Length: 138
Picture 1 (tube, rainbow, N blue to C red):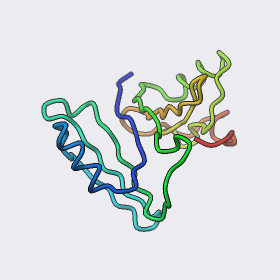
Picture 2: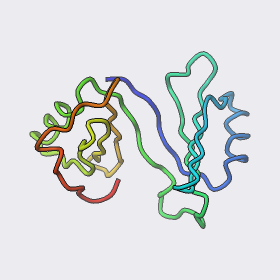
Picture 3: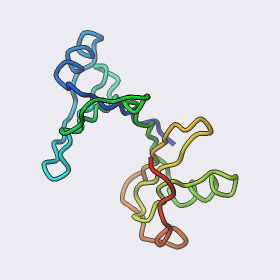
């Protein structure tokens, strides 16, 4: 397993980027999604690009309350199906099953979302995951 990033939602990406620039982090990539009306901006400390902060800007949001601006931690895993099965076998609810062989979401006992991403190419759809419903939100 490899740690990838932490995600926070931001209302003013330019101000947040300036803040993180002052800390020494630099923008390493950006994705603007017109259809979904959001931007993803990844920052990292120079020389340590493997540990990233993902800034998510939802273009139409009107402010965050109640801690909703913290998003998730993300990890890349060798086998997303085996990882989810191990978690499920130990009582962890899979909130967003890996139906696509690529991504899943689970929650810690304290309700923090954890994103799991398949290393490399996505795996072929496999049961019981291919038809598993989402449970809750992530």
